[in-house]
Image (cartoon, helix red, strand yellow):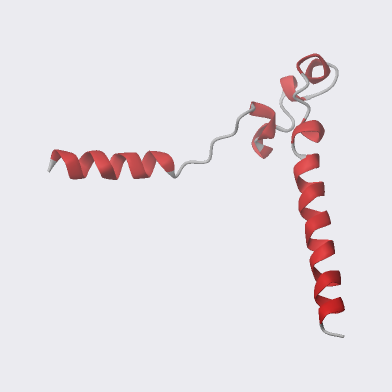
Length: 73
């Protein structure tokens, strides 16, 4: 019984959203430490942490329809 409870607790803890940096969390975008000039020193500005990821996803999505269109010809 203890083993089952331990496994259930591990699964529940593993399902939480965790961010590597506090300024990656959208809830903290407007926090004092995530605003310039303070975030410039720590290099944790949200636009530095989140924008490259979003830009990469947009580029991948834009390339996929183009490759599918060329195979249908």
